[in-house]
Length: 92
Image 1: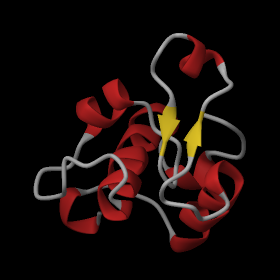
Image 2: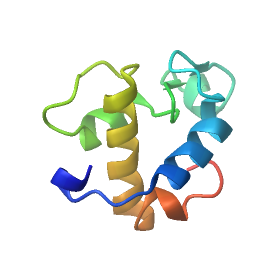
Image 3: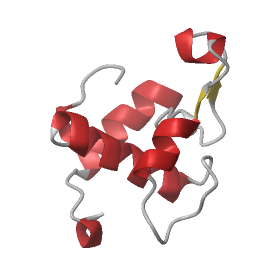
Image 4: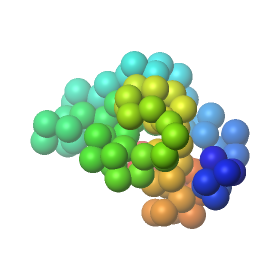
């Protein structure tokens, strides 16, 4: 993340991973509004595919369930929207 200029600390990532997926990289949310619209949130940080593709970090896997790709895309999104994953304290 630092090579790409994406801010975020281990603590911010860990806090959000535990809230979003309890640390399960294969987690899928099948009950919220995204799921109802046909685009369920997936992975450690519960990213929907369009967001993952828009914020994907080059050099990481295109597999949304890949932990590194999921975290870096989510942190890239959080940086754009909130300044950092450290500033996210609820669903985002």
